[in-house]
Amino acid sequence: MGWMWTKEHRARQAAFERRRYPTDLTDEEWQVIRPLLPPSSARGRRVGVDLREVLNAIRYLARTGCGWRMLPVHFGPWQTIYWWFRR
Image (cartoon, rainbow, N blue to C red; front, side):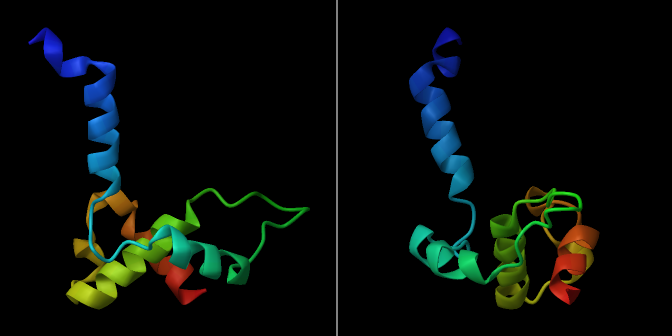
């Protein structure tokens, strides 16, 4: 079992985990959308979530038609995604 945690395995695992859903934004789509998102406030708290993952979650919800509470945990708490959706 020593073969399992090699550098090559970890690289393959990271690549596998990143390609989760067909609804995920591509890098090209993200480059177009990113300037349209609200910037971090200079005086307030920084954004604590990855907005790309928030958009991935919203796209997943729109495509699958699942409920907010059925959102896969990989996207983070459904309440956080819902808050950004309402904003």
